[in-house]
Image (cartoon, rainbow over all chains, first blue to last red; front, side, top):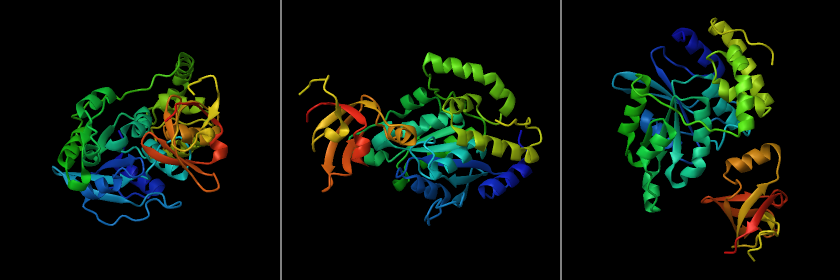
Length: 259
Length: 83
């Protein structure tokens, strides 16, 4: 259980986000140009959207909305194709999803090129199961005679999937309902995991117990194992950075050793 | 033309022709980036146009137009698949 007051302080200090104690935090992720900002504006009722995440300004696009008396804080992350290639945008998005501990990560996908968009979605599903997928631009896809089987996608990926045409306001009600159900604990998820070669899987199994001991429930140990196998040094440094600072906010976190 | 034993690279594709990726022989972050864009083995790639100096070159990959430096395109091996 996270302590609401210190969680707010943590988000403010590390991500520049102002959250009220009763708000649920939703991270908004997706490839560039999938209508993420349209979804953001449609949900929050905000209009202006300029210069998202330029330079080192870690987080400024945030907006609030209320649905069924439940208050949400939506945080717009930079558009990225991946969370692994280490551009500044990707690191910001990854750090927030991993260490900001949003209640839900809402991933917006472009229905007209779903295949390429699923790369990011699958990477996020490796980090967390608290994900809602929004297949946007359904109107554009229809023009190109592309039809998406939303229920099948939901079965395949194991998390709620909602189809939208955010520009026209279509599907937003379903999206709000899906977010609401997840924060209320009314939706169970079983996020699709990529199974790697036997060699890699064995290495993951070897690393898991130690990682579990070190990071506790703060991070998905399988994801951390994969990054270790990737010898992703910068990410390992981020883990030490965030988790050691979090000691002061969340004293129950086990001590993190030097990697 | 359909001789699979002949090694082509993306850089050898003429405008309009299609190749199918065999291997991506780039390393590090650029490799990661190329794979993230969907340029994985088996992917069909069409050469769309070349800039006047021949560099960069635009390719259609999974419905998206992507420009690559020819130095990088040379490290991506393909089968020629004709038009």
